[in-house]
Image (spheres, rainbow, N blue to C red):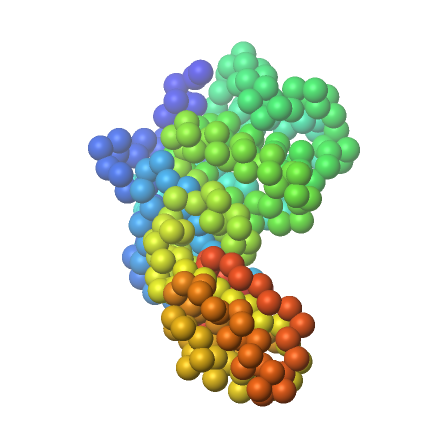
Length: 336
């Protein structure tokens, strides 16, 4: 590897010092704000810290401000006010240095469609200052690591969505960034490709890579992230590990009642009828009942529904999820 590649020199020749290895803080935002024309406040006074080696998730519905936040941290979106630091570098005071410390996988396919899989990786290595021999070696190594060796000579347009996403992740970590940013990494992928990408991210995490990802898939955030921030309308509503966030609901059972009739009256009456109930609400056309314990819950729900003339068509009993947390915080479904 060349000296430029080791120090993280960029195409404009600006050398980026490595982040302080003694510090666990890799990302920090201070009152970070973005207001778009027309007064749309996409991100509002955001204070956030991400530690070295974490997979940190920004979870929220479309339009919550997740992509804008990631854009400001990766120099793609100019903040209206506030500060953003990556690897100790002020992103907007020293954008060239910041770019050398980050790897980015955007939502859209940004691969060079005129090149093969191998050529995309090779030329990216050259851009970041690797010599020709080291670029070839690193390209071959990443092809093997990301299980793309058999596709090395494949033109990019011939790749499936899952393989293209895998190649973009490989390209993004070529220069060994301090932080890997992934914006909705599994959007549009089939279930098998989602699983394969999750395994790759898990392997990178075990190797010590810090990862920040945005997602609106609660299962993805729950399964991948060490910590996450639930975001809506540019505000952090809750922050913690998935387990901590789910425990914050104060329930251990979520009963979902699908029925025909006066659902609001059913929701209003259920807490007084069901032992251990903490509250009920109508969300997205169903009644959601939070309960501590499960003893006698379903018979009590059905009995009350019969009294009210409500016809129950389905009952589901589950543990609380991150979507439960979001509904508790906002009163709306995460998918809205």
